[in-house]
Image 1 (cartoon, one colour):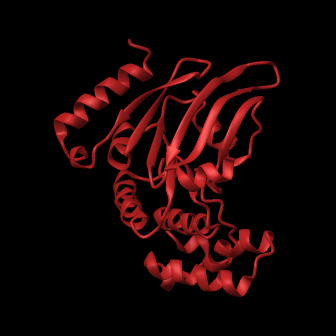
Image 2 (cartoon, rainbow, N blue to C red):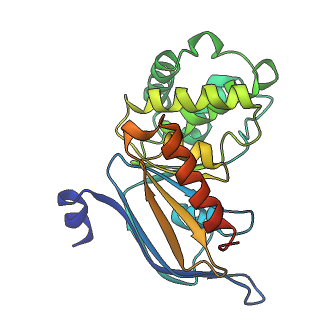
Length: 244
């Protein structure tokens, strides 16, 4: 039934009544539910410690939920840090997950080189991480995530450690790149402007434990509307601050 549902539905992920707590019964997430649509860019935003990163770690299987159900298509997780191995060049770093999962490396190498060309990084395949800028390292990490062939990409604050100019350039780059790939995105951020610029829909974390979201739809024609951005930003700030 689940497989048939995802073949016929625009929904690619359903998170139903999930709960998560730490060892001392410190409840972080309680009976939380939401869904993700095909080709949707969904941002989850909230203050530090609200549980937003934990959500995608539960979806990816890195963490185990205490109750609830998560059903959906294949996911790939991209952490905040690039985690590139300094002794492996760019191409070798991209191929590492393929090696670990014992895929056909000749086929995977062809795909990796194709992705590098599509994302204008073909000149850097033999470079090492120390030779790359912070933005380039994140682009390489993104290609490594793409190579998993997952339907859903889980991006955990991938631009938060970058300077403002690099961050803005990568935001534009990400939107441009996604036009060529049939992917759905869950993007974790604490940056409201970033969420508005990138997203089709924004879920704002509320309460502790996290049991619900405040939802905002971001029409494409409104992304550069300064009045709309100001209005949504002010509302989200109130949501995050608990109405203060």
